[in-house]
Image (cartoon, rainbow, N blue to C red; front, top):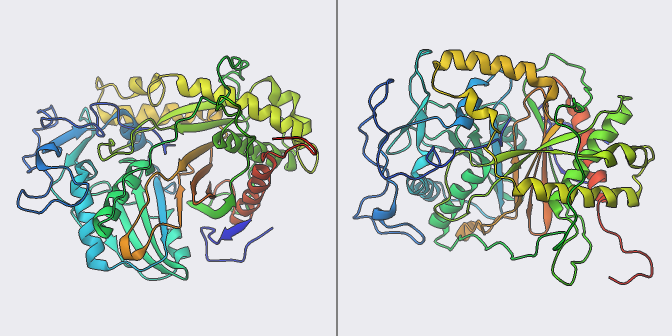
Length: 510
């Protein structure tokens, strides 16, 4: 396993809630043609709309002024943003980190100008939280005409130190934009490291903004690559998925292993792995399973084998998986735009448990069966159209009660429901759709994301693929795992992912 060191603590030698969901149509991520109207919390601000002036020459890919959103005023927090805001806690940073590795160097003023232009082009990122009181009926985002502070900095120091800041120091919500971008000189070139306050927006939305900044900086086309047209995996007439474990069954929790159970904050492991191979497609173009299904099974294997090593009794593993249906074009809604689905397993989880975790390596036939049943289940889950946080999210944010009372009962319900929270979160960003071409600084050679690891899960797995490689960020709560344990868990994931790779039968034809 190739490892880029970071453990959330001073560098050491290597050892052996969401992304979450997003603004709904008409919320923060959606375009509107009129400003937000007055409310019981006060009138909207009279700030001018964002965007460049008509006299400014238009850059490649920039929308003409008449097509840019002009939204002075304020917007109430969408459901996902509000619930995230209610549940903020000291010691559990609600950050998403993105790091883009470039082979060359970035010119400071040119980069700052490109980022400012991208922020204005995607004006919904230029928000700050308006002052509020407990009796108000909503939190509000104030839409600003420009950044309150320069989001780009050259802090110096090492990449390990920047990663440590990414999981401890959250950009404030009361200053626009709620992101910061640090430029770190690294031994292989330059790293652009962005840190996002996840209450305001998610990783894919920020990556869209960074792709626009790359286009403005390098004057090169950074349009997204069209997604390949493929037959649905499983083929036509594929069997319906077998019944999964009931969501009322208490799931497994990653067994704690730490010498400091009262520690706060997150640790993080950043590694690069080979993409696991898959069987050839059927003649109709259908795939037996996807890389995402392999990642789900690898996460299951990591969790089950870790708990077996710690002599924990069997409990079913449940994995929260964000699904993002937004386009990756310039009109991509900016905000929290994913919906969450819960991937549970079925009878095969108990039937195959011993074959999968009882020996040094999982039984290949058992892994293949797990992959095929998981593929059928995830295909059905992705086809469902549900609210981003399920049907209960809207009830928690109804405006009948003031935000102070809503915050109190949201936190209380979250605590009561903690034992039924999923085992872990797996956020697979997939293939980076943008070239991320920064001109003379070069194209991105690797991109990493990491998602928050909030309790009670205390663990998140985030993956993205570039240049035929898989970038993995494992992030954990220090209250559950210390950094030695986190590295061991990462190695377990690498072996689990390798066990999902397709291996042709000897003498067989593919």
